[in-house]
Image (tube, rainbow, N blue to C red; front, side, top):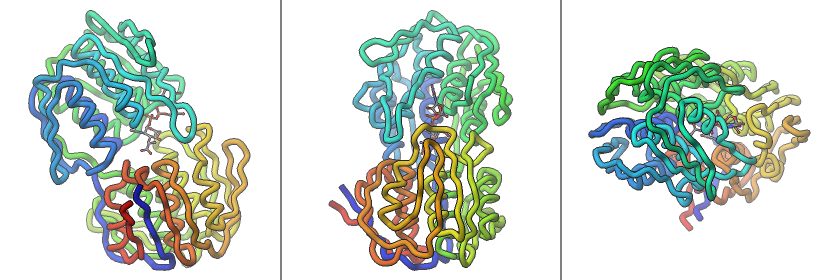
Length: 417
Ligand code: EPZ
């Protein structure tokens, strides 16, 4: 397993380009199953999770080619309906093939995803959405087994907003007979990107980005081409890295309107964030002020930025409170940050961070995608050498992060094991 070694203390300066959004690419790849033919996707990031979704599509009978951020998917022969445990257990987002496969083939057998480092990741909302659309759904031997003679449009309501369940419902509804109204739908930019792709395929989808999505089903869909939107979590991760190192960087391709909550919080710490040259110019403060954060569904502060922001608060002037409201226990980065000298107290879903002037380098272990990003950010400012192990976690969601950071002046290398 590869390791990443960082010698801390360098300011980040220069320019960096954001890659395509993992969490837009994955559902869009699944959506190609709704129609037979050849699709061209641009700005597709080269990530482990994207490769995994490519494998899932191949198992379902599609042909997938991915070279240099361009992907071609041919779903002409996508006539299989089973997504196996071996693949789904490695990536929960595979469950997004449930809606398209069920809608197009009339049946689907998708493994339950299992849990992850911070607790169970249920899919009950996904299952209920398929049932609301008229499908028969059973859980058999760890698989979701769904079938239908034809989905029917309906009105459904999610108790709490769910990105994946909204995506599955939207995709399935495009082939249902009649109109579907999805209430309390997720509003993330990736939902909008998926909706735009579905419209390009000939679907009638409206209201994406608001809390209510309306899908007029029954349209024959056809292949379409798409450019994947920039990754707002990679954007936020680099914004925090620049703030932590007191740097000055132009983040090319970053969209402020997809990162508003993070930008506002960083401005509260004393960082400067402004739009420039179609991207974002971020300048770090001399010493960041402590600010409180509560994660929330979009447009609130993203849970996927919670660990990275905690790394920043670890070296802030003062004490801060970070409240995680989306997941029960998304704090596996806390013990590792404490090994670097951070002072953090935990009480259920609330972390209290007392900023310290200096972190000190140490050996730490990545436990999940965003936690590993937080450890790399902390290593950028820690005194001496930080060694992050199990970096396969970070390769799931960040394309060559060590190369991008090194190009900005960080002393960071990957040790291939
Ligand atoms: C998406 O996951 C993202 N993944 C996650 O990003 C992100 O953390 C999450 O949304 C929240 O923003 C992708 O888009 C591929 P949810 P998803 O359904 O769809 C509960 C990353 O780092 N829930 O919005 O799985 C769930 O447990 C990843 O890139 C149910 O209870 O998240 C959570 O508490 C990590 N039942 C809350 O809802 C369900 O059926 C929100 O989950 C589904 C979800």
